[in-house]
Length: 448
Image (tube, rainbow, N blue to C red; front, side):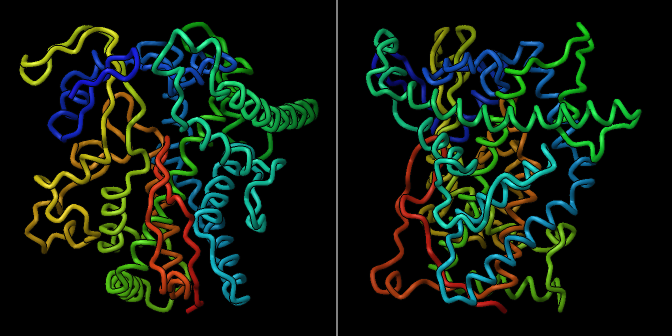
């Protein structure tokens, strides 16, 4: 459908067929980016892999270094022990809280866990604290990051009425500028620390100790011009990596736990499968995930009914394009939104679309969804997008979501708090850039 949102013509793709036109058949012509007003803070869009045109040499360089050095299968295999350690820290913390009789704040803890995984990979250090009970301290990395994610998802009049953008009527750009500056300062401190460490080891004639992803970025030299990334590009890239790949994974685990609290038979089936595959082993290994078919089905069903990004970041038509076999024209400059939330609840594709039913993805079912994948090939399930603009963090998110969820289900019995049993679990959504629970779930856990 076509909407006029303020002064902006917007085409919305709300079916798998329409998404295929946008993301596959006409990907090149429709892969431009519609730039929200907030991306102009510190000229963010001129340095960001998320907002750069796909034809840009800098976009290709950033995408290539991330895909090859951070999310490539061999890199993920190398860092497997790091993910195991971070998940073990999560499980140990949940165990301590469970023994104290307090409820578990699932999203806060998984959010901090994913932040620490990324920061350990990038900086060789943790920047989040699992013991931060509020997780929103103004001085904490995770608190500022959480505020950034919430703020950039707010509806902004400036994005629909460009003529008033310079006045920033809601103050969103000013607020984001302050938040970006605080995160930039924290990241810049880490870069300066690493530069000093590298200078010391170089002076001693030694290579950098424990080479991390920041070292890869600092060492990068373009094949075309021999130049490396400037400081602003480094700050922007690292901010993007933290803001795109942390809250989405945490929210997915939280939604899965919440749904399983409402469907205890599904939880029992998942735990039975874990016991069968793991036996007496207390820890889940990534090599176990392929054997956990029902757990994989739970994650797929969670992605379907609670997609991390309900509306993919808006595309823009780079050329006037004919779609739907020439029946419709998308003019140059049109903003294009893929409604993943609607695609996942399409009754023509998904029987009983409002029901949480992981069994639909199992081979023994006759629904036809068993072979549906979420890696961008099947347009019925698009948690990470597809095409040129597909999220590059998908391989890491896939491993972390499954590993965290499997570990929490294997090590603990979960139940609702008495007040949630009495009043019902609040499953309302907080819609923004990411889809999170409006009221974060608090669940009781009992160590197994």
